[in-house]
Image (tube, rainbow, N blue to C red; front, side, top):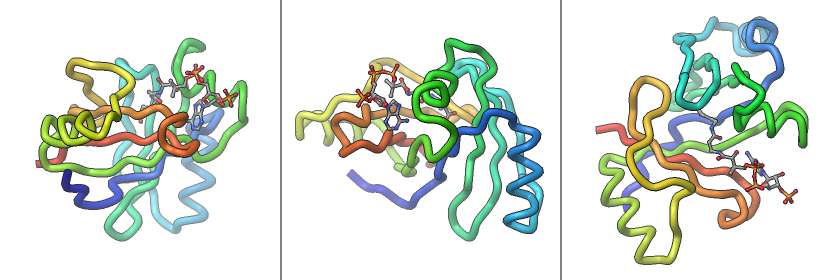
Length: 134
Ligand code: CMX
């Protein structure tokens, strides 16, 4: 499996607009992109930081994984996302190591990219996302 870079660090926030104002102040630049990812029930804002990004995530629905995360653990680092050039290849390499994603079948995240998530219980406590960036 080839991980090309840390694509982004996801940070769960309760209020996206307040989070954007805070991170715009902290990072000295506005987010490059703000979008709703309906399939994940989140609104997300991406801030470029060198070769990687910070993704602020706010739930759009109480059933959202981010809403559950905040209810249980409070706002904070939610996941790490690594870019791979070929998601099928990465999944097949991980399957050979006995590691399965949370869901099977195509899943699309921000920007319409194919993604896969791995449960924190099998990754030492950090939710890991892989995103296919060709
Ligand atoms: N990081 C670390 N630990 C986490 C976690 C996270 N993001 N989310 C949950 N956990 C922990 C919980 O605290 C809990 O730990 P304990 O058992 O020690 O109390 C355990 O994982 C619970 O796991 P669970 O019962 O399987 O279920 P949850 O309902 O908490 O769901 C998860 C966890 C990872 C399965 C769910 O969040 C999920 O499916 N995530 C993938 C999709 C996603 O996160 N989408 C939002 C982001 C989308 C985007 O980036 O655009």
